[in-house]
Structure formats: C-alpha cells, structure tokens
Amino acid sequence: MTRKRINIICNSAISIMLLIVFGLTYNFEIKSVYSNADYEPYYSGNSSNANACLMINVYWGNDYIIPILEILEANNIKTTFFIGGSWANKYPELLQNIYDAGHELGNHGYSHKDHDKLSKESNQDEIFVTHQTIKSLLGVEMNLFAPPSGAYNSVTLSVANSLGYRTIMWTKDSIDWRDQNADLIYTRATKNIKNGDLILLHPTLKTAEALQSIIDAYTNAGIKLTTVSETIA
Image (cartoon, rainbow, N blue to C red; front, side):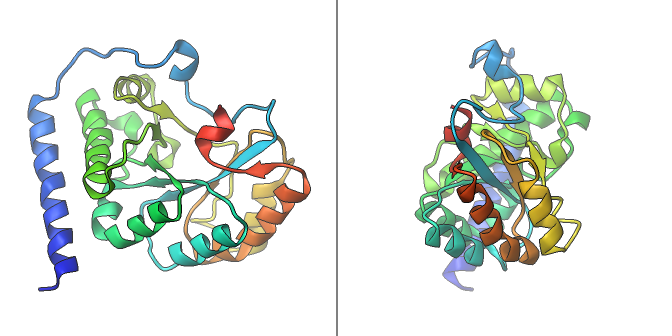
C-alpha cells in the first residue's frame, strides 16, 4: 500500500471519527460571531471597490484543477476555492497544490448536502468536520462557507455564524457543471460586469477553456480579480 493511500485512509478515518464525536457531543446555544450585517449571506462584494472574484466550488473532479491553477498563475490572480471535505480527503495532493499556489480556501460542506433540509446538528457536522479536515491537512483556519447548491435557511446561517463563518452565495452563476459550453459559460460569467461580482465556477474542462477570456473581460473593464475576502471587504 502506498504512502499516499495510507494518508488518504487515515484522513478519512479522522473525519469519520470527528463526525461521530461531533454529532454526539457538540450541542450548544447559537451565538453570533459577526455583526448582524455579516450574519446575512453575501450575494456580491463591496461595490465601492473595483474588485470581483472567480470563486471555484470544488466537490467533484480532479482533472482540471492544475490547468485552472496554471491559468490563474499566468495572470497573477489569487482567488477563493470552496472545498468539500470528502473531496479534500480524496485528493489531498491537489488541495495542497491549491494552497501552495496562494489561493484562499473556503468551506463547501463535507457531503454536498442541501443544508436547508438538515437539522441544526447536521448543519454543524457538515461545516465543522470540513473545517477540521482542512485544518488537519493544511493547518488552515477557514471562515467562508459556500452552501452546496446554494441551499440554506435561517438555521444554516445561525450555525455558520456560530462557527465563525460568513455565508457566501454568488452574483453570477455560470452553471458550468451542467452546460458544457465554453461560450455559454463566458457569457454568463461576464454579463453586466460590475464591481463586487462573485462569479460561481467549477473545475470543468469547458470552464478551463473559458477562463482566460473571462479574466480578460474583467481586466479590460478595470476590475481586479481577487479573493472573496478582499471582494467583500
């Protein structure tokens, strides 16, 4: 058995243990971490600043992470990758590549469940175990949460806030996971470009093909592509 395989098995075992322990013991009164303004989800960033973010949600797939990283590096762009916990356990080396390239990491839940259908305890499990998984792999403390499928309710927001997370949605959805068409992805990502745009992407082949053109469109509009944290600041 290879060392890589052993590490993946160990990380998966740790995550399962966290799920069990967390589910049995982590029951607390919800307390606000951020102010009321930060409690609500972000659908866009600060329009006063000429910033936008190509936020990349990663729960499945591994073939196009490196090509996307190479395009971002060639354009000197740091962005935000929202990572699924189970994906991180499956592809720890790719996770390390993303982190080593200097990109911001966010939380995308552990099992890609619709959080608006989960109990408070299950919401806690999904977010907290992903947090601990990434922390165990990289030593990173994340504070941005992107609900899988954009599904959330007041319980999700309360739990995320109590765990020190801002909830992040999007301004523009490329729907690249469904429509494998680079021109369509580009059109959706660049329609009515404005300050504070949060553009939702995924690591697909056609997204990688459209990425340079999307970058060029924002650059030509005088908008800096950067992380979610910088865009909402």
